[in-house]
Length: 396
Image (tube, rainbow, N blue to C red; front, side, top):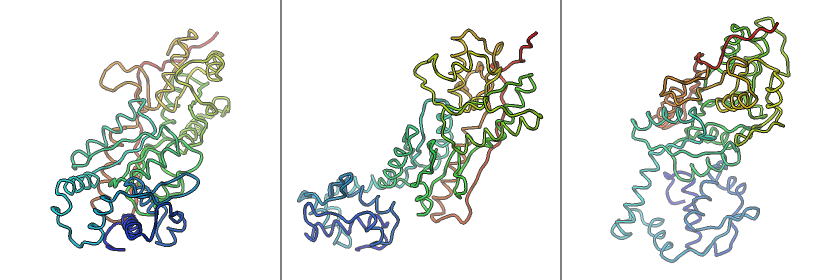
């Protein structure tokens, strides 16, 4: 390879560009598989994937799902420009076109100062407050923020990680999607010492930099508040059946709080085996039937959106909040800029969470080498009492 000081994925790119220019690889020749390239260059799969993605973007190869990567016809002017950059030790900008060279250099500088944030959705104020905190720190440090939505899909999340790496993003802040298994691309980031921070959750048994809140303590605060109001039939609800570590910790906190009160744990009150279609309300949905049958006097929802949904269902049935049922959400459903937020909630200090994640990433980028110790920040949640919880009604 021509320049060992270049990043490994760029060295691999240049290797194949040279082969194509010198006709050692011809049009429609197949590029070795990712596994073969990993062995040939002794690099990680992420490095190989980055190189191939960029080669395809620049028009050197075609990547065909299920078949592999193939050399494509490269325009003569592209080959000519690449001959200069590959074989000249210090090309003159005037020889290559000062405008194009400056433009490429400017794009490279922008990439070096860009941080990617991969987040499931932007449907509530929780995500917006997170991003506000992240952006405050990045802006002060002169970094640009690029936001990508995984739509809570692990496959999309994988693609976004690879695209961010291929585009030369400086570092990543990742809010992992709900999934039964870990995203192996996050593990690959760790193995390749790429600077990234997880937010809102961590990966059990795997050391990474992360910022989250104490989920167990959050549900303890929630249950204890409802218990003090006289509630004994308290349901805990999630809108996804996937056993993420955050959901597991919150349910564990719920059960521990019940045991501390000497109460029996009723599995029927742990509502985590369904999904919710927020675009409509169906009377056949198990959660609708549960509310209509007055199975619980209080509900703890593991996100704010679900709390609003239960409130809407209750209103449709004819139940009043908090007279007939109490609702306590994780996170504040309101904007936070008004004084009239009605939902009692567990605040996770999302803006602070975002700031701390960005500060950790800035430190990683400043040091320029793998940290000897991971930063693991666990924030303490806070109970904010509003109008959606009240004393349980006694029946005669």
